[in-house]
Structure formats: C-alpha cells, structure tokens
Length: 331
Image (cartoon, rainbow, N blue to C red; front, side):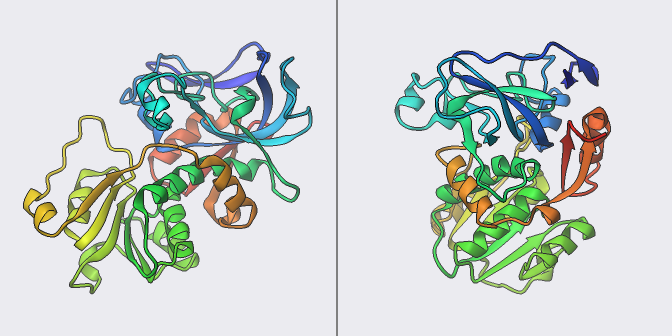
C-alpha cells in the first residue's frame, strides 16, 4: 500500500506492506483522512512520537478485513474511527479519564495512521456509519468529537454569549455546537478574511479581525481559543466577563507561555478550563454528524490525493482553506 510518512527531516509518500488485523482489529480502506494542527506539530518536532510515523488520526473508510474474534462489524461496513488508544489500567483510566492516560497513544500519532490506503484499528474504536452518510465526509467525526468533549467541559448555559478566536475548522465546529447549545450570540475573531466569510456563511453573529471592533462592555460569558497562539490567548482572557469561562481549546506549542491576571480570576470568579482530545464523545459526535450538525461541503475546502499529502500539509500550514482532506482513492 501507499502511505504518507513523517520522518525527522521530510514528509514523503512511500510504499509499505499491506496491514493485517489482530484478533480484535479491523483493516479499513481509507476513504478520507483530514489534516489537523497535530500533524503539523508532529512534522515540526513539537510533539514527541517515535518517528518515522504514518500520520492521520481523522479518518473513515470501509472495513475490508476483520480479526478472528471480531463479531461487531462485517467486511463492507462503512466506519469512522476514534484514534484514541487508552491503556485502561493507569490511574487516570481507572477514574474514567482515558484522554489523560499515563500511557496515552493514538492512531496516526504514536502508531500507524489513516494517511494511507489502509489502516488498522481496534474494533472497539469503530463506529458504523448509517445509510446516507458519505464515508469520506465522516472523517469530520473525529474533530467533531473533540469539540463535543470541549462542550462537556464548558458545561454551557442557555443564553450565553460566546467569543471564539480562530475561524478554522475547529472554531467553526465550536460555533455550530454553541448555536445548538442555546447561545444568544456567537462572535468570531480571525485575521483571515476568507475564514471569516465562511463563519458568516454558517450564521455567525459577528466576524471581526479584532475583538475591539465588538461592543460588549461587560465581556462574554464564554471565550474559546481555537488558535493556540499566545497573542490570541492573552487577548481572549481579557474579554471574559465576570463569572465567565475561558477555554483553551487550541493546541499551543509545549513551551508557550501566556500571561494573565490572577487577581481577575479571583475577584471576578473567572473559570479557566482545558479540553484534551476525545473522551466519551465519539459516538455522540457520529450521531450529531449523521443528523446534519455540520455541512461537509463547507467544512472541507480541499480534497486531494494521497500522493499530494506533503503539499496538503504545507497548504494547511499556510492557512489556505478550511479542512484539507486526502483521499487515497483520488488520483
């Protein structure tokens, strides 16, 4: 099979042996695999998997082989794959916090992923897609499941006013969930006019290049950073209203430092929360996706061949488009 490979000094597309499933695993012929900021962090050496690695933790496809102890799926089933690989035994797993697993691993991050013609996954990580869902589009379920986890942490209230930094794929997903969670308004901040246009197309309340352009003197109930950029994080914190919540959703560099006022946190009872990957949210994201919570034709701006993976990664780095997806069957 062909697969994209990230090594210490290059991103390439190479041939490698076709995978075979273990006893409780399936082999998926990948229909679509999304590129995400985590892939950039891996390529830039800011994340610490063992390289080389086949990336791709956002993928969906058709089951083409099953292990001898698999009864839940059959060859021909269309599935989306949760990439999370929790040990189930450590302190945090035993407390139901598998996304904080002390042996945390993930398909496409620490093990061979879905930026390939075929990928192996535990059957427990696969969700069968209902009729009417385009399989390649269902690669959006993984990032949506991260957004669902984000809202679990937020614990929002009806009528909240939201300010979201970053109108990329994740910011747009958080916007869509905010509307479904009963937001009174959702405003978006981004420096990229094309991304703000997409946010407007999806029904955002306001789109701006700076929060200074918005008139909300008491601040916002919920401010979410989807950029991981320190300047945006520091600005966003100043926009949280009394009793409000700031969520760090975007992935910053591991050594990034942001400054904020501890006095404000105390005096105004500001809550700061993080959200890490997927936790008990993949199935719910699949159901939301099947019910039309996202518009794939808007979210996915580019569909490229697997051979174009290195170019697709650089296009993502340049901020061109929204979700960029490689499709191994596309030539």
